[in-house]
Image 1: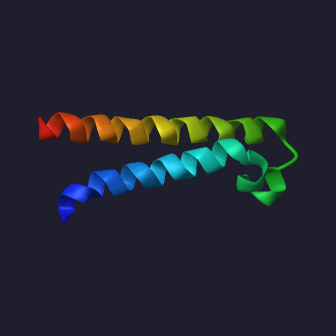
Image 2: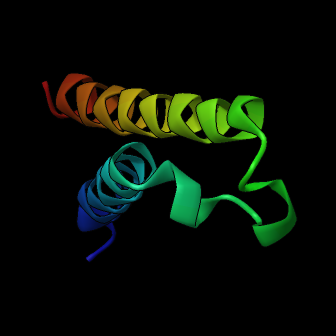
Length: 65
């Protein structure tokens, strides 16, 4: 049961990352949506989420070797 936790967490991080990259203005707080730097920071966080999701998959692969 617990061996699927890595896959679930990775999938969740990848999905959230794609959403943050695809629609960063919607994912930014309402009072900061008009500030371009905040929207860019949201998009950068999406790339971080995707990278961390891939990192978890690599860790799971190395553990199973």
